[in-house]
Image (cartoon, rainbow, N blue to C red; front, side, top):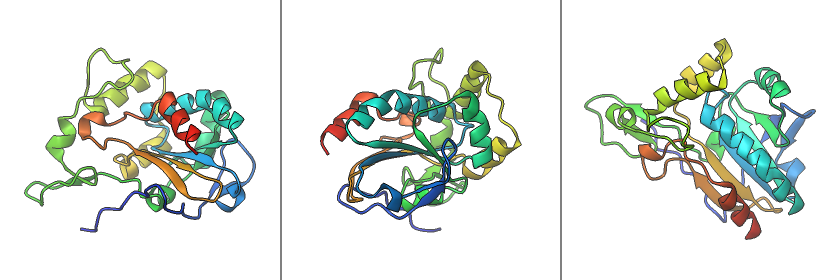
Length: 223
C-alpha cells in the first residue's frame, strides 16, 4: 500500500502540465500561463453531476476573475472527444482541459479515496476509507435532493434530473476513477500556489461540497 499523496500547499510551485483543451484549439500548459495568475479546478468526469454543476458555477465566476486578470481552468477526467461533444451543447467560457488518467490531479496532490478491504489497517481520510464510511455518507450540497442521500444514489438521482445518460466512455472513467476527489488551486503569475481547497476535508458527509463563488472571489482578491 503506497503512501497517501500530499496536496500542494500555498507557497509551493505548481507542477508542469500540458493538457488538450475541449473548447479551444491545442493544449494549455503551465508554461503558456506564465505571467498570468489562474484558478484551476480538478474534477471527476462528466459522469459526476456535482462536478458539472461546479463547472457551471465557475462559468458564472469567470467574468469577475477575468476582469481581475485571472484565468479560469477546469480539468475533467473525460477524454477530449467526449468532452467536446458534451460542451457543444453545454458551452462554457471556462477553459476546459481533459485528463482522463488523472495524472495532473495527482501532480497537484488531489487525493483519490482508496476503499480498504475488510480487516485492513485503520482508515486515513481522505486517502483511505472503509466501505462503511463511504456507504454511510449522506449528502445534499446543492439542496436539490429531497433529502440527503448516499453519494452514489445522489449521482443517479441528479443524472436522471439532468437527462444525462452516461455512455460507455463515462462508465469506463467511473470504473477507473470513481473515487477521485476534487481540488481547486489559485496560482499566481510566477506559478506559485496561493490558495488551495480540497473536497471532503471534513469527512465523507462533505463529499461533493465545493468552494462557493464568494470564496473563490475572495481568494482571488488576496492575490
